[in-house]
Image (cartoon, rainbow, N blue to C red; front, top):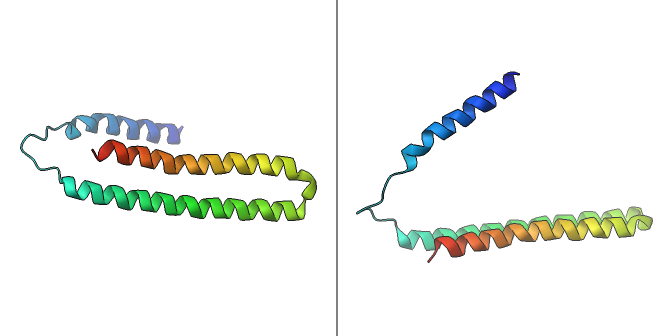
Length: 102
C-alpha cells in the first residue's frame, strides 16, 4: 500500500510540473549547432552499446549451444529475437536523430 502511495504521489507531481515546461521559445536561440553534435554523439553511444549488447548475446548463445546442443532451435530463436530487439534500439535512436536534426 505504501508503494502505491509513493507511485501516485510521484505521478501527480510529474503531471502538475508539466505546465512549467510549456514555455515559448520566441527570441531565444536554440543552439542549432550543438543539436547536431549531440545527435552525433548520441547515435555513436547508442550504436556502440548496441554492438556490445549484441556481442554479449552472441557469446552467451554460443556458450549455451556448447553446453546443450540439443536445445539448438530454442536458443537460436531466442538469439534472433534478442538481436532484433537490440538492433531496434539503434534504429529508434536513428529516427530520433532525424526528427531533431532538420
